[in-house]
Image 1: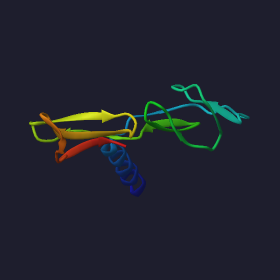
Image 2: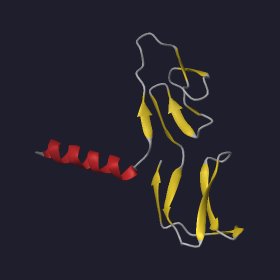
Image 3: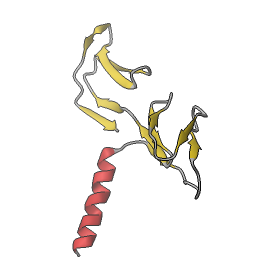
Image 4: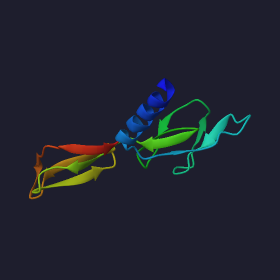
Length: 106
């Protein structure tokens, strides 16, 4: 019974993160793998961030950012691909940042 409760806890925690991830199979004997987005090669055991803002290893990738879901209605979220993050600012004044009440990912 303890193991069932522990398994349910892990499932609940995984769903709370809401990260966008995918996995890849690592073939026996592989020494390098190729990033699906950038087509760059990486040694098995390494980690990197690709141009699509995913943090990757040879066995999978997850988004490197959170996506704002709740912020004031007079604000807008804009993705900064150089920094791999969303910036939430006033719709009519990009210099004035807005509070974020909720986000998903990472």
